[in-house]
Each structure stands twice: as structure tokens, then as C-alpha cells.
Image 1: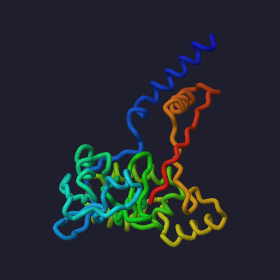
Image 2 (image 1 turned 180 degrees about the vertical axis):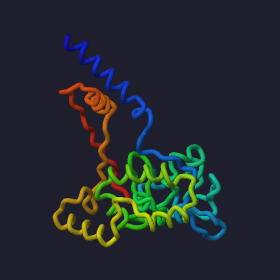
Image 3 (image 1 turned 90 degrees about the vertical axis):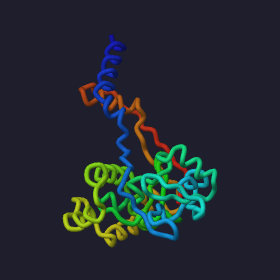
Length: 243
């Protein structure tokens, strides 16, 4: 009697949650706008010339060779080697920075800007590359990575993907998002947490990103339809230290 009931509740939970399981909430379209600079022969250069593949293969921000270039979706990427260029060409979506290379913390406020991707200004989360306008922007973002990631993807999907970045930036500089904080306020918060050693990511420590397993998600769905007493299992995935 108990086993069939549990099976039924699990099936209900998984069916109710099936759209969520099919769509990764931490993904966004990545077809523009793009944050670029003009340098040498490349008027639309991504990542300020850093090799997008090297973040994954060398765990470092590596400058690309100006002679090893590939154009994709109207913008240019430089690579440290021909092998890296070939790897990118085979699967560009796997290596492109999220949010068109704009600072992820800026996108958290629906403001596209910054995002060089140099040392201390990038991070790999769940196999995806996010870049920042600088070390402080990354520090502030990582005070609550999961919440800020969710907000950033929502604002990118709802407001910024395909939009004119300057106009979008101007709009949100006037009409701030509800959770907006100044750089000064964020830095004060970060320094207070640092002194108390309560930062989720202490300087020099690896980033930890929590993710629900499919089983846990199914349990959450089951609870949502009234299956009291069933509990999910949370898996904590630790990425390599980066940036």
C-alpha cells in the first residue's frame, strides 16, 4: 500500500515539474548584444582579447594571439593556439561568455557594461563562463551567487537579450531594479562579512555552487502537490577555483 502510494506521488511530482526539468533556469540566449572593444585589426573584439577556451583548459585568463582569430555572430575572438581556435569552432556555445561578455554583476541590475574577463574578473559556474568588470564586481556578486545568477539570467532573458545595450543601460540607470545597491554599500557589506569571516567565498577559496539533483527536484514537485513528509536531497557541487 505504501510503495504504490509513494510511486504515485513521485510520478505526480515529476510530471508537475517536467517543464522545469526540461529547461535549465541558469541559461540564456547568447546571440547579442555583445560587449566588445576595438583593438588592432579587430573592431569588435570579445573578452578584451582573452582566449575563451583557455578559461576552461588552463583555468586562467590567457591573452589570445592577434593572428589567431575567429569571427562568430559578428564579433571576433582571439586564441592562444590554433588548437584552441579549432576547439571553439567545433562548439562555440560551450566557450562563449554568458550575457554577451558583459559584467555578470551589472546584468544582475539589468545594466550592461564592463566585463573584461582578465585575471580576477571571471568565474566558471556549472561549466559556463561569466566575466566581471573587475575583482570587486566578482566579490560583490559572490556574496549571494545563486540569487544573483537567477536575477541576472531573468533580466537578460526578459529585458536585455537582443536589445540596444546603451538604451537598456540608460533606462535602468534611471529606473533602478528593486534590489539595487551602490558600489559603496556593496563594498561595505563585503568588508563587514570579510571581517566576520562569513563570506560564502573567502578570498583564495574555491567557489561552491549548490544545485538540486533531478531526484530532489522531483521531491520538491511532489511536496508542491501535497505529498507531505517527502524530503529532497541537495547536492553541493564544487567548481575548481578560478580567476
